[in-house]
Image (cartoon, rainbow, N blue to C red; front, side):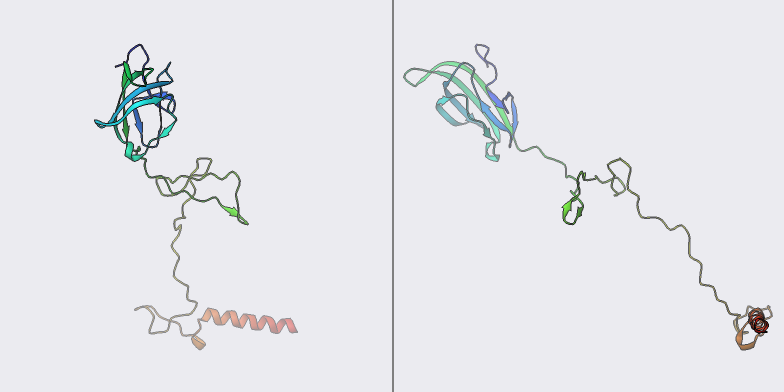
Length: 195
């Protein structure tokens, strides 16, 4: 209930609020008053009752502050006692807001132990790669484009290795006739060159 149109007395970062989170900065003020009589409960238990100077210094909420606060604000008499009711206010303090697990932060690349200027930590993509600052995904490892063929053998098979039904030409020193002709041709070419 608010009397005399004074409105909300609990503040979050200087602005009127009804819900705060642990870690927020809470304030308390009653416009037009420099001191009041405050009766405040936390979760139904009296937390404070007595004269209170305004505005309250900013206070960062701790985990122990979670719960419901109810304030009854009274005028402070010249004798320092509780006077006429000014108004009431309440606020709920919740545990710190949960955050999603952030992507791992990658350190900036370094050149001679100096961080690279303008480095932006790329976020992971759905495929596990990263995105460049241009928004283009970094290439992943290349797939195999061809299957390597088995090594070639430049020797004629021996009669025992020949497939059934195919004649095998016997060569000298286990060499094919074509290989022998090439060697002979090279030899003849060398002899003619010397003449």
